[in-house]
Length: 215
Ligand code: 1PZ
Image (cartoon, rainbow, N blue to C red; front, side, top):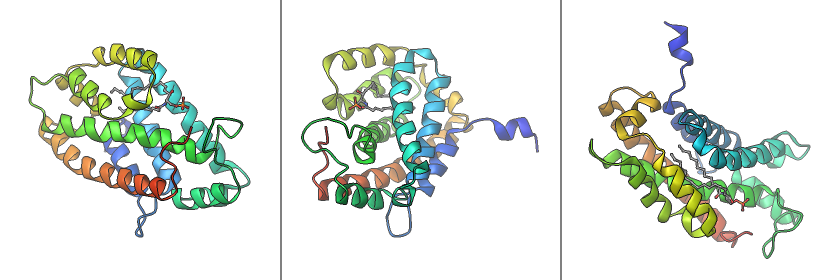
């Protein structure tokens, strides 16, 4: 096989990571979840530098989690479930105001988790879109239904500007590097329910521990 072809990034890898992060008993492996995010960042960066204010924040959060994964407490940072247990038992989570535990795994994952809701909504629109659908419209609709409610005006404004720089649907499909438009749609048909499942498990875990509003 052609090795250069094999090394070409495909959004399929992202899907594989999110598939791998789900354990048999519905726990979520942090390492694979973060690998999925690394792939998303790589993809977004390939679309242009207008998105760097978005990827910068995602990279910072990926890095915080990477540090936990390498720390002396790494045995507790295997799954979301073990992380939540460990951080709660050791008072590593701030519930009221943001202070010196800004780098807690729980608050960091919560931010990415909210981003995943955007992704799920966006990919579902993309999946059901037609050739003349506008990616910028699908993107901002998904954003308004998810992340926007957690963002101040200035970020919403900047996000709106960035969305206008998204390539059209044909180019967008090509950059995903999955194959023909039909193959992209098929891949999305797999990706959306999978991402939804990861999202729902996380949402339930955070709800159980009253952690959906961590500052
Ligand atoms: C294809 C186009 C991608 C659009 C992605 C939609 C998200 C746009 C808005 C992102 C704004 C990022 C600026 C920084 C925001 C942070 O203040 C917040 C809260 O974190 P805190 O300040 O409390 O530490 N960060 C987030 O909400 C995390 C958002 C991550 C979203 C990344 C999505 C990338 C997905 C790429 C998929 C192709």
